Length: 238
Image (cartoon, rainbow, N blue to C red):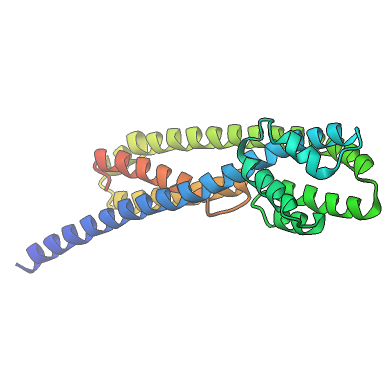
């Protein structure tokens, strides 16, 4: 009777652990997806800034005021930074100073746009906005090219690691767990938990590689742990 109760309690505990694992993975996917969406939005804004600076530099060479230049640029394809540019135009139209407009742009979610606005504020104070914009345009274009290469390289690395890890999981499921069971070892469940822990750690590490932040890695960790858990469950290892 005691043995039967122990078996039942063990089964309940095991099912509870499995449920917690899958729920935790689902929560991580939800959290990570939100942070990645925000990070990609910031990246897309940063990618648009060099085009904005190039247009500013081109129009400012004709001696136009910043307000006139921004109004002309408004008709261009501004993409994700259109809202910030339109707000800047509205502020200048209402009589706000360049410094006030720059302070608004510096508070935007795009670090590159904040950098440009800070430089413009200082350039306006020195009266060398045109020369500064030409230099800044060259710098931002080179920086954008390097950033694109870094993003592409990191995304390729993330894909490679995910593929390699899933192959590793398949090998563990097909070969190692079969070997453990066939030799009478009782560590299959423990090995499965360790493998799931590796999936979480790998996903969080990929978040640091791709976004320099562990939180976006929650998406990768959630997906890897969910796929790993399903494979282990189908193999009878959980």
